[in-house]
Every structure is written in C-alpha cells, then in structure tokens.
Length: 282
Image 1 (tube, rainbow, N blue to C red):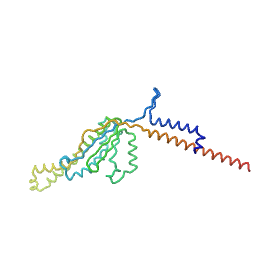
Image 2 (image 1 turned 90 degrees about the vertical axis):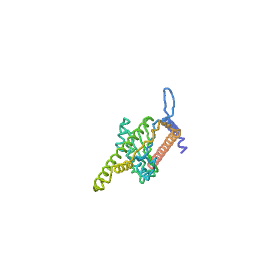
Image 3 (image 1 turned 60 degrees about the vertical axis):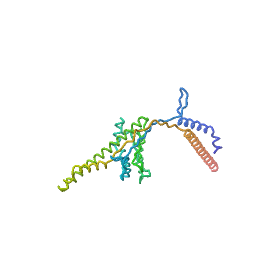
Image 4 (image 1 turned 45 degrees about the vertical axis):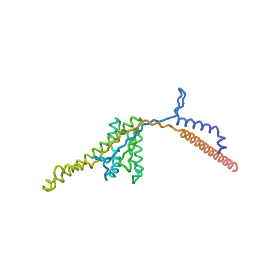
C-alpha cells in the first residue's frame, strides 16, 4: 500500500492540502484583509437556579415525617416545568416566542427513575429542540426536595433572565394548583361539619374550625426560590486535538479512496488483458 501511495504521491499531496485547509476551516477563523489566523470560539450564556419544594410551615425550621414526601413532590413539580402553561409564562416574561425555549428533564434515565424514556419520545424532544436557542435542563435530587435549573441561552444575561422567569413561573403554578386543591379541601371540611348531628355540630366551635383550616393550610406545598440565579457567558474554544483529528481523518479517507480506485483500475486492466488473450487464442 505504501508503494502504491508513493506512485500516487501527487494525488496524495492534493489530499493532504485539502485536509489541511479543512482542518484550518474547522479550528480557525481566517481573515484575508488583514491576513490573520484566529482560533475559533463559541460563546454561549449559562445560568443556574435552585428551588426548594417546601410546606407552608417550612421543614427547614421544623422537620417532620412529611420531609420524604416532599422529595417525591419535587420530581412531580420538576415535570410540571415542561407544561405549556409554565413555558408560555416564562416566554412572556422573556418577551420571546415559546418555541424558542426547550425544556428537558428530569432525566428519566437517572438512577432515581424506574424506567427509561422511549427512544421515539427522546428523538421527538431532540427535533423540537433543534429550532430553539434557549434550553432549560430540570434536575431533581433523589435525597432532598431540591430542583435545580440549568439554563443555556445566546448570552449570559438572557440565561439569567430565563432562569429567573422559569423559577417564577413554576412557583406561580405550584401556588395556583395548591390553592385550587386547598379550596376543595376546605369545602369538604365545612360539609363534614354541616353533616354532623346538631349537638355535635354545636360542640365544634369557631376555634376548632380555625384549627382544622390551619392544619389544611400547613399541608400545602410551596416552592421557594433559593436566592438569585447565577450565570454568565461561557466561551468554548475548538481544541487542537479536534483540528488534528479532522486532518488525520480526511487524509486517511483520501488514501483509502485512492487505494480502492487504484485496485479497481488494476483489476479492470487485468480483465481487459485476459479478454484480449482469450480473443487471440480463439
């Protein structure tokens, strides 16, 4: 193969030149006026926001047996982030179309989940995300009622704003759902009291009703935003290893292609020679 490539050294040199130009194009920005060569870099915005799934009477002050229940609620609330209501509210706060925002997670392939996401559904999410330039990854902690938002946007400022908008939209959604459920529960308490016999109903004084209502209020869910979102611009430079890999790959493919073509030409020549010999014998 080396002897054959040496015979085709002119074509090999052309391939090396093309590979060098392609590698330079991948890793560097070339300017002709003035002549300069600068390594390529991509700048994106990244931000992070932490949320605590808590009860109205904070478990940070008084930890109760319901602490483990909040861990399960965190996963549910994390999935609520990928609803049209939450996304629309965040997009409105950002002043962008909802289609520009892609929300992923919580990761169904993580150790805290029992099943894997179907590949078709995962591909559908990837297709939807190809047209968006703002991404939100929702991550939950299997041991604590914490939700972390990892946000990517064109700039650091936009990433921080999107993290704050998503956090506020999620907080409002949790407050809305809790208020709706609480209203129904309070109605149930009133119906239970009204259904009691008259003497028993008279024994339930106003203080008792208030205590029962207070218990229901304490059973709600509250999403607390833990501080301001943090983030900024992140620069990702194309490494020298990538440039070298592109160069080597193109040269290798070019040499393989030359050897294959040369082999086919030799095989064709031999077939033609045999055909001529057979024709002469006949």
